[in-house]
Length: 219
Ligand code: DC
Image 1 (cartoon, rainbow, N blue to C red):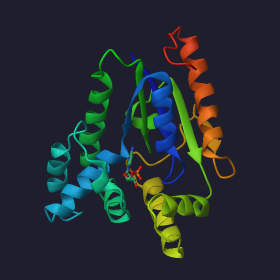
Image 2 (cartoon, rainbow, N blue to C red):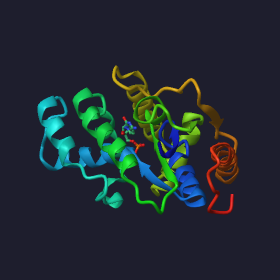
Image 3 (cartoon, rainbow, N blue to C red):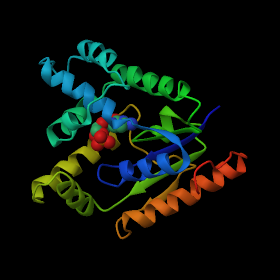
Image 4 (cartoon, rainbow, N blue to C red):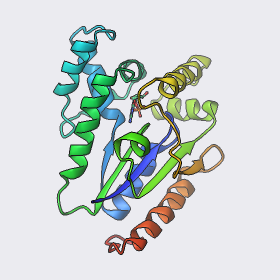
C-alpha cells in the first residue's frame, strides 16, 4: 500500500493550495479530484449532453483522462456548477472514482505516495488513507477567496453559488461531502493559508515517520 493523504472540504476552503504544498514538501503525487468532475462537465457542455441523461453521463466519464486535463479551461463558476450537478450521478461517480484509484496505484517510483483533494477522498476514494484532513471555513470567507482568486468582484451571487454547491455536494445520496470519522478538522476561517499548510505538514510528517518513511524532502 502506498502512503496516501486525503484532503477534503468545500469550495474555497484552501484544499488545492494545501495539497500542492504537501505534494511538494513530501514528494507525494497530487491529484485534484475536482478536476475530473470539471473535465466531465466541460465535455457535457461541449457535447450538449443533458445533465439528467445518466447513460450519456457515464459515457462522458469514460472520456476523462486524469493525465491530460487542461486546468485553464476549467477554472470558472459555470463549469463548477455543472460539475456539482453531474456529481450526483452514481454511475458517473463510479467511473471517476475507479480512475482516481488507478491513478494512485500507478504512480512512478519517484513519488513516496499520493495526496488527493476533493469531497469524498477520505470517505470513499481512499478510505484507508494514512492521513485525512477536512478543511472548514465560513462560506462568506470562502466566497471572498474565490472571487479574489478568479479576479472578480465579490457579490451576494458568488456567496449564493457557494452555498448552493455546498448543499448539493453535502446532501447528495452517493458519496456526499462528509467528514471522515478519523479526519483531523482544520478550520481555515481565521488562519492564513501559510499556517494551515504548516499545520497540515506537521500531521503528514508524523504519519510518515510512524510508517518509517524516509522524509526525502525537508520536513
Ligand atoms: O473541488 P472543485 O470545486 O473543483 O469540485 C467541483 C465539483 O466536483 C464539486 O462541486 C463537486 C464535485 N466533486 C465531487 O463530487 N467529488 C470530489 N471528490 C471532487 C469534486
